[in-house]
Length: 328
Image 1: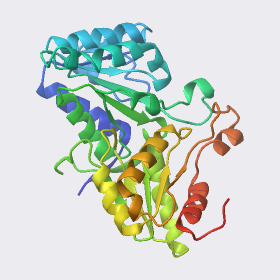
Image 2 (image 1 turned 90 degrees about the horizontal axis):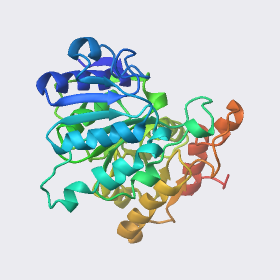
Image 3 (image 1 turned 180 degrees about the horizontal axis):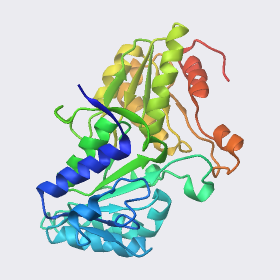
């Protein structure tokens, strides 16, 4: 039987497993060593593997991410922890101009086995500069793979798969999920890192989401079920590439589509556009998206909660999309 563990522990176990198996795997970032990581993901790794493989760095995201790119070019497998995705803006040159492009520009002579882990999202009054996701920016960078684990099981396998990959992989980890618990079965065979999963089957409406919003969408679907609306919930698990096929099969069954995201609508716009192109004649109503407001995240807790989707607002959006409720 699978154990119930928090997401941070699943990531920590994945790091430990891959570091034990391959001496070329190392991690670096601010406070990953002696402190054990801001969200405990590197806890105890410093004592186990030493300072050469668990590297505390200066507060210089561009420098240590660039260093990791160079290490990946010569055969190492670095795992960068950027303390929060908001600080990744300082490392975008290394991520977008180096990691994403060097394999292409070298004609494949330089693989890029680089992982960049980034906590992000709205997480209880961290204010505008510390509540971003930035997936809409990273999704527009050819050459990057972007994984968005929402469960301990996905965190365990997607990080391990990312470390083993010869392509640059960004893991966007939601800060509110680190201490949420779920089952982890380490013997369960892995899904491909980019494969979406149907978290809840249904016949009336397809809800497509990812990360923290996928979990909220699942709770919203349970409420909808009590109202007689049978919603299917798809967790994308990956934003680059996107598993269009799983979503298409669902839409061909339900004929209604709602995309839910925490950010201000741009990632969801790409998902809606991609699925509308592929499934236009299967839709009985326009596809819709439910997203955060187009504004910086407020610090005030009440205003913060009002700026992003909630279970209640997802239910209202689903009613409208399925034709079972009045516009909210």
